[in-house]
Length: 502
Ligand SMILES: Cc1ncc(COP(=O)(O)O)c(C=O)c1O
Image (cartoon, rainbow, N blue to C red):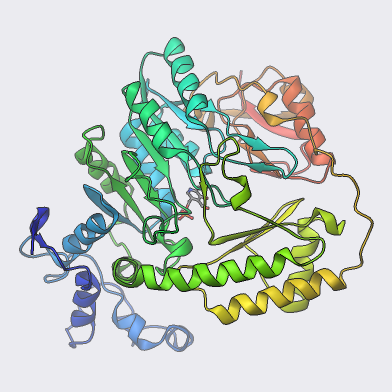
């Protein structure tokens, strides 16, 4: 067995030290004269005890317990994070109890201080822009590739990233990092290796928000993990696909020296509760063990089931399965078969209508619906019976929904990529500054305090700190008129907007 850094010995992946430590403590009958107040169950409302079971309450233990996260290093808690780092090929891993959201906040604080500029994918998750509100750095945005027909944003290309870094450099010399998202909500994977090469040639670290790909790299038929492709830091939202509890995620820093891990640790301390949930942390330790030890076998079955489901759905009139054929189009270097994306335009119905019909008829709850698509998310182990059943449910639903003649699909709006985004002040200054609520036409020329993204396409049209233009107002009106939801807008009807007080 090889000695590994941090006091780990090779071959420890089948253990779950933190989970085992809270189990050992929780059930040995300690005198619980510490928080939480339910004292392992007796003080909890009977309804909660019934709902969660006493076992879960016994394991709900606080921080700073000897033998769990206090004692000789590495403590079980430290070993759990070291094992996660080993499994993901990282230099350091942090367990997150506020989702990948917390990871974006931490990375923004660590890498985008006031006065700095980060190149960021325009449709990055809102938590990245929120991280910039916390940190004070400014974004320089790069547009993702966009399939207008399907209303689907893909990844960004290395060429677009290179051009954006150069453009950002011309305006502000202090470009400190590049943030991209891969995979997308639809499972499309960017050319991460190409983006890493471009970022590193420009001397900046590449951060990949792989929130939707915590399983990447754990089966040969899945895309490789971004760290293996050269990224310097990666976020994995473990709860989304792998079996940890909702709100638990991980932040990994790679082996390059482009990111100061101590700085990330400091920002993590700032963002972390002093009472992180032991249930969430324990679930991360367990999910890592399952993924590292049995992930390949579990994924093997899920991938086979996913393949059979796609084959079935490919034979359903009106449905086109979107996935592998996208590979090679701009912004798509690979794809994730754990996402089943259905283009339902040929039914003459929208994705929203098909998703509603599925809910009402069969209690099938898709992850996402858009004008053109319905998206199902599969987990690391999705039993074959689920997949067979949902295949039948979709087939029946499509047969039953009253068919209407398909109308030729028109792009809902002008391409968002054509819009200019003028970042005037940092998101922090706009978000925290004094604001006025004004009519949208009066807002032209003012600086937005809001983030507004239309769904579809889900790409923010306006972010805090950007100038409101007549073109943007027209674009958002058009989106609204086409039935899109304006996510983030203080006025969903888009009659008024918050702007920075002049
Ligand atoms: C790309 C991306 N990053 C980050 C997040 C935030 O993840 P979490 O819900 O784990 O906080 C999401 C959530 O959907 C996401 O889609």
